[in-house]
Length: 121
Length: 106
Image (tube, rainbow over all chains, first blue to last red; front, side, top):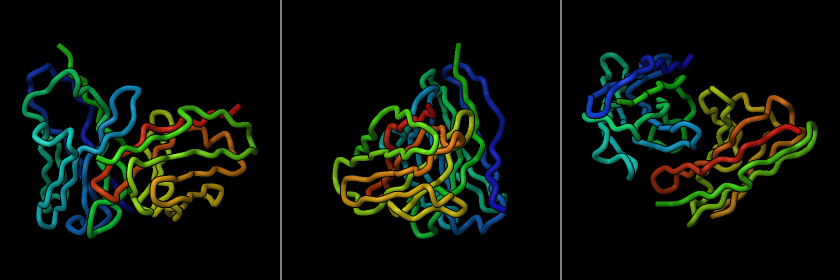
């Protein structure tokens, strides 16, 4: 059974750094893209970026390039989403997603339960 | 960036009736469109990919159609459990989501 288990909710202050994680299991981790989708309160879905653990090829959505860092470690079958300096506008639910097709990201067949990040002074 | 416009924003449908949701792309995305369902306080779930192929375990009352710039998600014989927000997503050029359509049950 494919599972994406995300780390717990976070409350941070503006300017602080943060890593959230996604532990994958139930499939061959290095052969599928894994990425992140943002959902701000009451808003729609935004694709942030995705990484292919097999070779670390990483792609970012235009709004997120340079704003976050996505990484993965195949030895522990996990991915991370990192901020170096949070802003209040980063307050959102963040979903870990698996790309359904091995060769390129395309669509997402499995989703984590989400990690709520709240940034407030 | 390819923009996806979903309409209507909200759709109110009686149980047993059909719901028709639209997704329009700012340029052709061939048939590279997926649809997702998101219920309150839940993660989204993949319904359709390739514009018309149902994902594993999705009931046959969910159907997708379209190509190029116009796509439709049809929910036949609407059930109370279908109350949710539905998003389209294109994966022809990078990845973008539409703004969503909320389906309410009358």
